[in-house]
Image 1: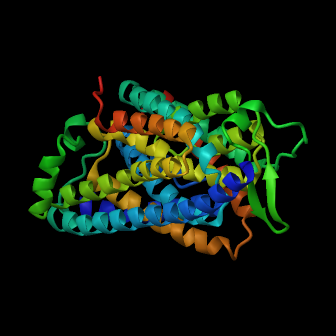
Image 2 (image 1 turned 60 degrees about the horizontal axis):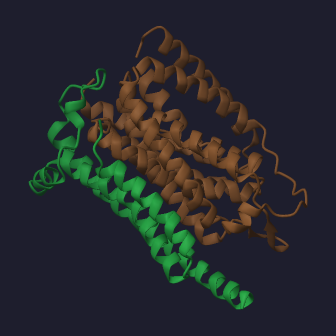
Amino acid sequence: MITSTFVPLVFVGSFVAGLLGSLTGLGGGVVIVPLLVLVFHVNVKYAIGASLVSVIATSSGAAAAYVREGYSNIRMGMFLEIATTLGALVGAFLATRLPAGIIGVVFGAVLIVSAALSLQRVDPLDTGAPPDRLATLLKLNSDYPTLEGRLEYHVRHIPAGFAMMFGAGTLSGLLGTGSGAFKVLAMDQIMRVPFKVSTTTSNFMIGVTAAAGVGIYLRRGFVDPGLAMPVMLGVLAGSIVGARLLLRMRTAWLRLAFAVVIAALGVEMIYGGITGRF
Amino acid sequence: MAETNAAQSSWTDERVEKLLGTLLLTGVIVSGLVVLVGGVLYLAKYGRDPLHYENFDPQRASLHSIIEVGKYAARGDGRAIIQIGLLLLIATPVMRVIFSMIAFALEKDRLYVALTVIVLVILLLSLFGKVT
């Protein structure tokens, strides 16, 4: 294959990944790397470099819309970004040191976990307990718009959530993904933040987390412009179209189908990593 | 006292959120357009080249200096123009953090100015620090 056939094909593949990622809320990043590695035989390190760049584009684009609607908790996002950016530095450093096979296996395992997580989402119930002292001190408690007006919520278990965010950041830097599923998990399951707030705040944080990882990627030669270009433009275009369609579509079945595809890609990545294909 | 503070900061928060949204969107659109222009020039020049993505070579794609990239971009080299676009894209979240820091400072929220500075330092460390 020559460059002028490769680029349009990667663009189309990335477009589909971005479209499905935004329709299912899982983000395009999770399927870009397996697509590039398994279908286009791109080295894992170039693949995660191009993927992390596209993650910045889609998260900034989506965050722009959410921030304006007033769902994101900007203080909580900023506080937790300390954890995710530190994690991303550690993850990106590991990515420069670890062999491609191990990255492939970790990637596969994370895909399978993300697929499982995407299927069970329950809005956490507020227990009505008094607010955590740390949350009050850090001014994390806030409110968000609902049909019945602005509703208050309390943020809980800050240290555990912070630790989980460090882990999410590490995975983002190691695998070139947004790790949105893990950020949401930390916020709604551990910190007990309403779903709408956790998903939008997570999106808001992903760009900064990814930028922390990309700095190291850039200087270590992970970001090839010829590959990053169609991936970034494809995922971005796909996610814009996806966001439009989302308003008019029921996505429950799509979510299930996508989870199955992701889990299958996960198995394939683990297999490829173990057998030394990467 | 506490009430007037809350009222003031919620008003400021709302404006900050609107501005943040505009900043993020502008960054993505501008960088996307630069990458697109670079992509067209890249295909025109390197379209017939064979692919080289199977084996990782850290020397090939690493960004050695911004000045060098600027020089090539000025000559209309597609690869360098894409790299400029990618740098603009990466600068978008960094700008967002700087902007938040200013906004927290205007709201006189010292705690959050400090927390934002920590995030900014980590980002700058990643972008400009020494990697070993």
